[in-house]
Amino acid sequence: MLLPKKVKHRKWHRGRASGKRLASQKTSLAFGSYGLKALTESWVTSRQIEAARRAMTRHIKRGGKIWIRIFPDHPITSKGSEMPMGKGKGAVDHYMTPVRPGTIMFEIDGVPESVAREALKLAGHKLPLKAKVITAELVM
Image 1 (tube, rainbow, N blue to C red):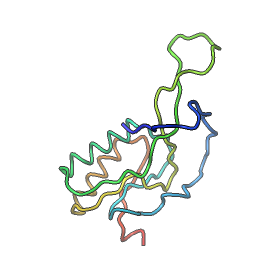
Image 2 (cartoon, one colour; image 1 turned 90 degrees about the horizontal axis):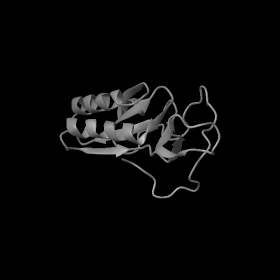
Image 3 (cartoon, rainbow, N blue to C red; image 1 turned 60 degrees about the horizontal axis):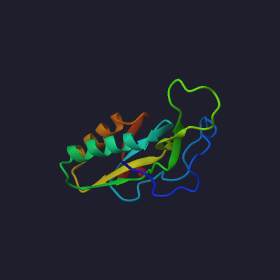
């Protein structure tokens, strides 16, 4: 799974609920010919990114090239079950990244269009948000 080697602060604040804010970065294809674009916002964990990567890799049978454009660098803490109130913030449990609508999360190149579309569709099923497959022709 993807984990940061080093973070500035071990435990972060969760942040505010953003509402209907669109992505301002990673909104166009940069590496591959096909990409998976988020249509809704969500927190995506490192486990979900790894599951999507495995689904794509298995479908393209290790051919072509896959780029992961998102990285989980936001630590999420949790306290044990049946813990009393107080006693401080819990330990770091996992890492996630907030994904806004319009963010391109994965890109594929080096495989036929039908294979790339199906691989990205399978990856989209592993993620907790709605996503669509885009091509380089539609973006330009």
